[in-house]
Length: 361
Image (cartoon, rainbow, N blue to C red):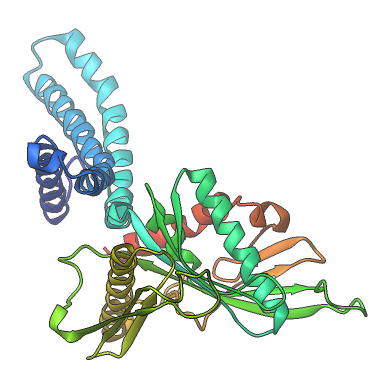
């Protein structure tokens, strides 16, 4: 049984341990401590690395003990110590093998855990008014899940449906594990049920699309502010007296890609500008990530899929009270899922993705 980690794996783990220690030093910097957002960002990154660093420390401790026992057997000077060593060595080797496996699993998901904020976009698909109602149900499902996890859930854009529900929603979700848990939600969500507006009792099929965008740091996204055209206008649509008369709405156009963002949710121009730039960076980051992924798509043919909006990832069947995730073929209780109990399904998806990444190491 191997008692050492492969050189390339150890090198990566030691690099992450150095990063962990550096992040700890930065959290003691008075300038950093004055910026609560920077503290939260660094803390999230450090927490994401903690299990990897702790695993490496435990492996090295077990290896050092193993080395001592091997040396004791080789010396043969103390019969009692030799007998103890022969008993302990198999246990330590089993411990090291288990630790090596768990360290690798933690390693391949460390980057995901380090992302502490995402942009969640939900849009009504096919199905008319029922699609809007369904999109609204999904919004509430994610809101309840976020509440269960203790995440911050902030509406950036919200467009109501004509018969209830929503046409579209853009949400900022922040907290520990938000990307590693929500990243699998991107795609088409299909529901089969009898709509409230159906008088004949017929089952209709409707869809809503979900996109989950990791909110990038400034260093992650390639954005030249000179490429962005910004204009300030009055808010559009219904509103109070000030909403449509005071110029508080921020409209951004990234000219190289044509990506547009308009933010008018608050009466503060400064707040709208901050949210607009956040959303623009997230959408641009997703565009750049998709382009990089497409270049190596042959290497990414996996059970989990790419998260493309065109993929039907899940079907929610009201009659049977189940939801089926097509990527892993697993069914869960529909009522519980819509009530925010996504964790069992999320955990199953994460296990599949971890196995795929480990196989690719």
